[in-house]
Length: 179
Image: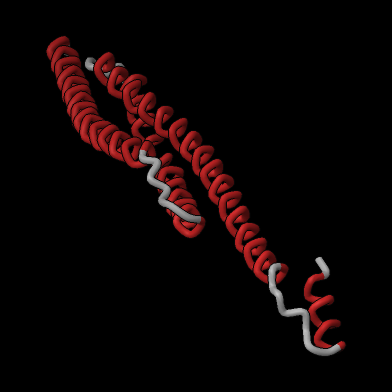
């Protein structure tokens, strides 16, 4: 009966080793997926930071309004990407909880992704502020241009030497010149 106990213990140990091997292989596969996803996220974040860093808003109110709409679209895309960043965080958390042997590298990669994410969000807010200032400035210039055009027209009317040939025409001119 000692042999049976020994065989049972040997079998249990073999099963435990197989299960541990399967667990470690699953962790390795997860770590590979993490590496791939973290790399893709980092590249996406870098590319979008380049896009957000460009302040080519154009000239004129229509161009700036179009830039605002484009910015809103970019902002929506970036906010939607947050769940993908969270997936990378979740994978790193699982790898840490399972005592993955390469957790230090995983944490470094995760920190890089999170730092890029924060930098992108900060750049997005900054771009929005600059865009709002550009819009206000362009709108003010448009308003000044409109006022100057109005004053030019008014000056032309006021400098007219036509005073009217009869009383009705004179009344019409008086009404036109009333500011």
